Image (tube, rainbow, N blue to C red; front, side):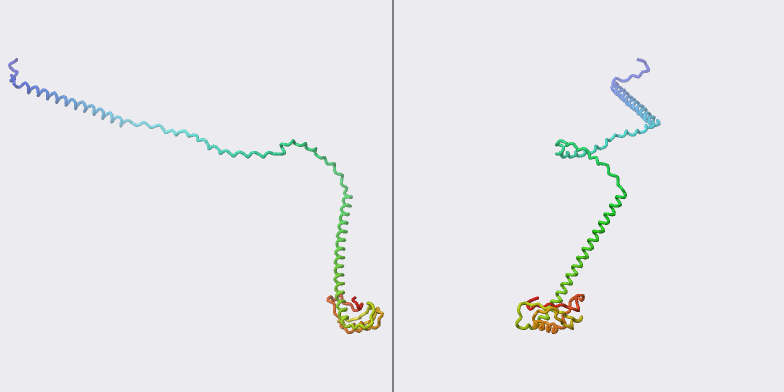
Length: 240
């Protein structure tokens, strides 16, 4: 041991050890701060560099391929109803008769056709004339029947009036007939009475003549065209 080195008392050795241990611990702590500080700075720089780098353009979005959608399946059509069995088909088909061949038509003669048309027209005219004649005759018959009925009614009224004034004489035999011709005016007034046919009994003829004169004026007809200036009036004691 040199003269310059201090002589430490032996009793101080434990304190020196503690100081050395604290100094070492402090250095370790500082070394740890330095190490983590440098590491943090390095990481921070890396982050800054990443932010300064220009971002690359993103690739254009590719549209997705169109998805093929199958068209809707058509609705199944209802199956047609089975055709009704044809009974005729079951039978054996009868052989068809051969087609009829019409014979050629004869050639038409214009002159004959004209004659035929004229004959038909003549027949039609005759039929029309015959129908018109029949209609005229029917109307005439109806008019004549109506006139005869009117005359019969007219004469019947005259006879009834005269019969009411006849006083029959006694002794008449059978049913003799007398016919008298009477002339009258349109008013029915009797101008004269003549015996056209005698009954064979003068008393009966005279009685009928007196009755005719007493019946003046005679009844008038309902139809004016039935009036006749000259009348033939028959008479029978027992009915006409």
